[in-house]
Length: 82
Image (cartoon, rainbow, N blue to C red; front, side, top):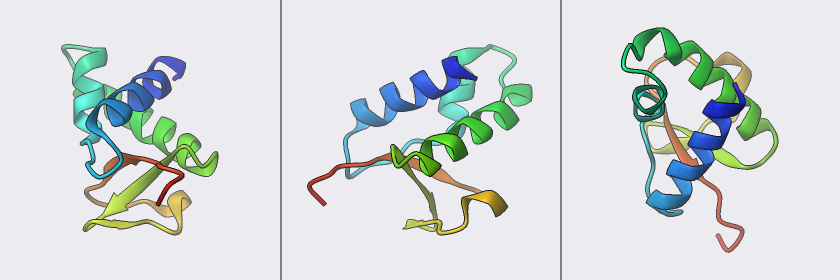
């Protein structure tokens, strides 16, 4: 999972604080057979969000309850200037 966390942080930083990434981008970068990696990527995203490193977005808005994620999400790096 550390690989997934590192990659999430790297990709969100590269995209910038005003843009987001799809979790599948992370999974695809980890493995050519990416679908089985999605659960791992989502779990890594939840840990990073709990730690205040990223925002998990649904319909463009930050999710308040990251422990009960459902549906399509996006990941955005946090900027402390917001």
